[in-house]
Length: 464
Image 1 (spheres, rainbow, N blue to C red):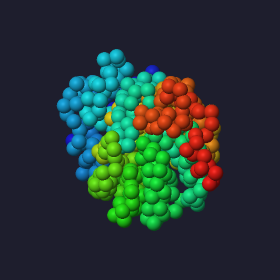
Image 2 (image 1 turned 180 degrees about the vertical axis):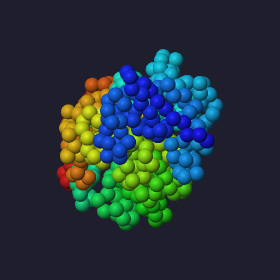
Image 3 (image 1 turned 45 degrees about the horizontal axis):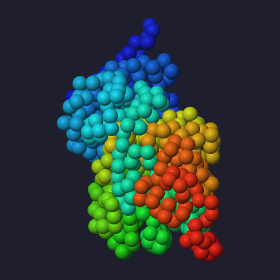
Image 4 (image 1 turned 45 degrees about the vertical axis):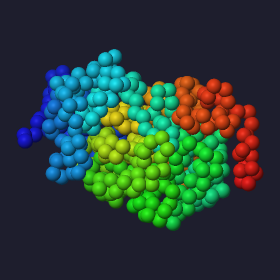
């Protein structure tokens, strides 16, 4: 196959791009990770030239020219082998610029976008995102509804769920319990009650899974739990009889990057099969939880010269193959080497959400930053509000927004409550009914807190 070359003239100067990979990288909005990798545009003018050349590129050219060769990468093989030609047919004649216009048009409603999703490759999604403004990313993502279920139903219109994240630097049961109670009192936890363990071994995973299961059972909470350990630990915990709800794993967009995580597609399939065998869901059987983030492939030196946002979109093909309950980008977690400041984090978070939703994923976002990034909570407020407007499936709920185990800044229980109130969003329906039944929420079921601690939780509070 002949590698295509691309060029575009801006004023008197013609900019050339050696291949599709180079064109995609130089069309990306500025971010520090692409500069670090040496793939970013050298100037704003070159970036505009790349974006204009990309807008004129037929989608068929992207489909026919995988940026990582088929024979070299199992993620490429997954993308190519699972591409749905029938779903692609209605848009097969479009260029990237035409796709943007089609997505923004009223004819592309939720049903049509859901039909087209299996025909859109990650590289197509990444390409069109590079020529879209933030308002474009928000408008299209808002039309993409992706509904999943396990013990409750997530992703419905007008709903935004939260992951209750009661991490503790020593996995202390009392500290975890206090954070859980605090989060539940603010209506957090319908997406998942998920712990990042401080001690990552199978015995501790079994203990934490058992503790979460006991709390959920005692209070009959219609939600699911997850201990965010390596997938091999979760498989072994299942083998030991642990009451595992969801299997977690970080995933990336290249085979080499996934190998650096100690995983491949076969291992993820084994884990999903193990979780399904337990039959613990009540309203659905989506059992996987994946986390992603721009820069992970670059940090593993496994990006094959791709820009970080295109690598990120390819991770969504991995996630899509396993029908997950939850996926989220931990957008600012890796640090300023990859997303330097609040402006880059905001843009990346909205790109990730858009691309994942366009590909048919139940996408959430950890609206976060590290303390050495040029960002603050004002930036996170902007991103949280924009994601809520865009129909984000879920966000994080961290005590005080400060994760004392992972040492990064995220969104608090109060932040999630703010977004629900301002944007008129509600919890998952089964969880919302439980909040009302437990007298945590009052009124019509919107995010209105009761005036006092519900009686059922007062003994738990006294024990803390």
